[in-house]
Image: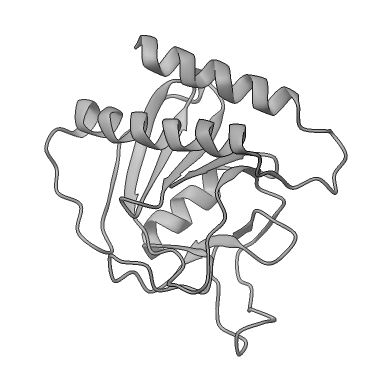
Length: 183
């Protein structure tokens, strides 16, 4: 619990240092990257505490009811584990397998916010590829969305999620929801 409180305090400090200008989409400083990596590490333990030794296979997710009164939503992404975690306040709500960038492409690390949401979107860069439940997190086209999830990095940079998880996540997050992406 003490580790979580320290990580949340670090997130709050980083969040306070982000200018409130709408054009600013992310913080990719070393401090923000370290905060996001710490949040991803804590999320792994929180998942085990909440869901036990569940083995989440590619395309699967776990979700439990946590009241909105628990706090604001935030998403934590672990690139090393290929997992996404949803929190309300300090309580983990969900965990899902994901697929992020396959080298040489990258999924950026740091602290981001949801900038735009569309229930159905098509990529302007990659052959009009469908991006259901798209939540864009940067000015270069990186987004969380439903997509093919082989359990390993396979995207051009986006965070692909199981379709049902992406749909549920889309319903509970809003523009401005923090997204921490850790290595």
